Length: 424
Image (cartoon, rainbow, N blue to C red; front, side):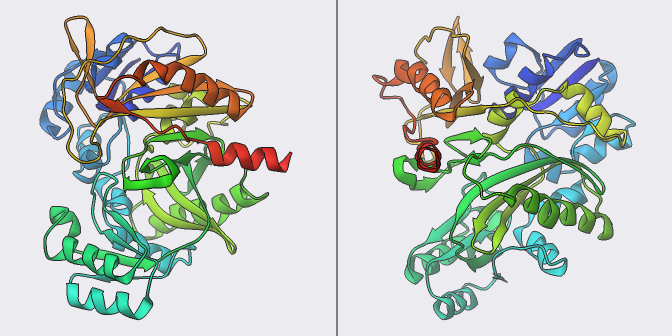
């Protein structure tokens, strides 16, 4: 089969690495891709926003299956464009992708179908939002309604911080059209985790749980990022929590989308928090998470090409998973998620059999890699124990320690390891 993966980040490289293992993958195109993908795929310089060119390329090159990675093309209706052209594509329609594109819409769905989530109110008026914040008090969470590259969420420790965030979003247009409306919701206490599932209508096939680390710096300090590292599965979830999340959140949400006339086909991602009352939804995404994908897919025993085909054909892919853990740590450009320099040379690292590298923001200059984004790459490893996987990753990342152009968090997964050692 000829396959096309649309996107340019770590999520898409992880997809390509996994697809390349399939005996059914004759040729893979990365559109537009990044430099690291060139080992497994042919890069094609078409922007993710250029629907006409993407459809034309798929037709001209007899692409058998296209997988859409990022959220923006999905919200722009790229999956619909492929379907209209009679092309096989994996990714939700524009109507279904709204579950990520509008936090208010997602909240309305959860409220209507009694899917557990935080109490909330939505606002387009800053003064009304501030009044609500004063009434509720802090801590409290302020979210831009639309897509903001993982950065449109402020967890405010004081009412003043929350009101400032509301003003930044609604009056100062901090996130452009994405913050014309905001959602203000109660702060939930508990352990966060992610749960992704392959979905076709009401058919839901969950993956293993994962945990992302959103804050830029150690100790969960600093601004929110797209994700600084992850591991899978989550070892310290209370017994039964995973099954409860599938039965009370993922399945009812898929069913709700069918009832709303927005049937979902693709990857439904639930960002969850384990509270005293059980798992609740923080957010939904309409695609593979990043960097969760980079630590979940390496544990998948199935042929990923066949999984996509089975799900699209309405068959149970009968997912099976390797035992043990996978962990990954992101190397980011200094200054990220704020301003940073591109074009910085990456140190040369030795390939190690137990460690894999997923490229996110790299290009090539002559024969060397240079940075082209905020999150540059992820170093990952699998092992029987989470602690061993992380040891392997951090040993590998020492090559970056003396380089002031890049940074990474040194505490990914540490809370889970200490919790696991306490339990044992």
